[in-house]
Length: 215
Ligand code: G6P
Ligand code: MG
Image (cartoon, rainbow, N blue to C red; front, side):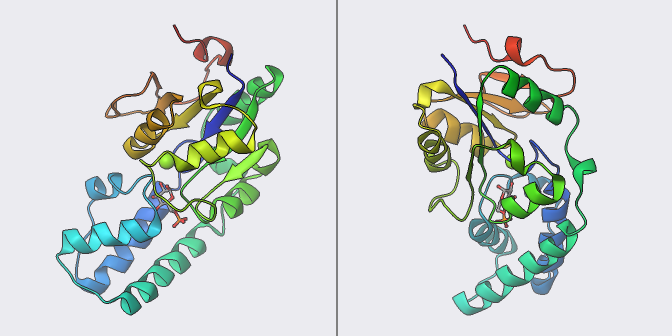
C-alpha cells in the first residue's frame, strides 16, 4: 500500500547541520550571543526566518525588520560559502544504497525540506536525479511542524497521505509527518526523537523491504 518515500534533506541525506551551526554562530556574534550546540539542535527543520527569531529571543535582543533582513542575507552568504565545496562524499552512509533499493521496489521519491538551498545541495552531491519531486523552502509558506511540506510532496507525486513514508531527523519534522497522516521513520543516533513509527540510527546496512513494513 505504500507508494512513496518523502525525505528531509539536512541530517537525513546529508549532514549540513554543522554548516548551519557555523553560519548562525558567526552571525550571532553580531549581537554578542554565543549559540550553543544544544540550541542549534532546536533549529533543525526550522526555516531560516524562524531560526533567526529564536536566536534573537535566546539572546534577548530586539532588531528591526531591516536589520533582520541584512542578517538573514549575511547568514545565508556564509552558509552558501560553506556548502560551495560540498560533493558526493558528503552523502550520509547507506543513503545511496537505500535509494537504489527504493527504486527497485518501485517507490516514488520526493524531497520535503524547509531549506531554500535544497536544490544546490542536491546538485553538488549528485543526488538530484533520484527525485521525482522536490518540495523545499521556496515552495512552502509554513515551517515544520506544519504538515504543508509533506502534503505538497504527496500531491506532487499524486499519492494520498497514507501511501507515504517520511524520513526525518528533526522533532519538528516528525510532528509535521504525523500531522500529515503519514508514517514516519526517524533517523536518530542519539535516541532523542519522540513519536516516530520506527527509528534507525543511519541508513547503513538497512534493508528497505523490511524497514517499510508496518503492523
Ligand atoms: C533545514 C535545516 C534548518 C534550516 C532550514 C532552512 O530544515 O534543518 O536548520 O534552517 O532547512 O534552510 P535554508 O537553507 O533555507 O537557510
Ligand atoms: Mg533535517
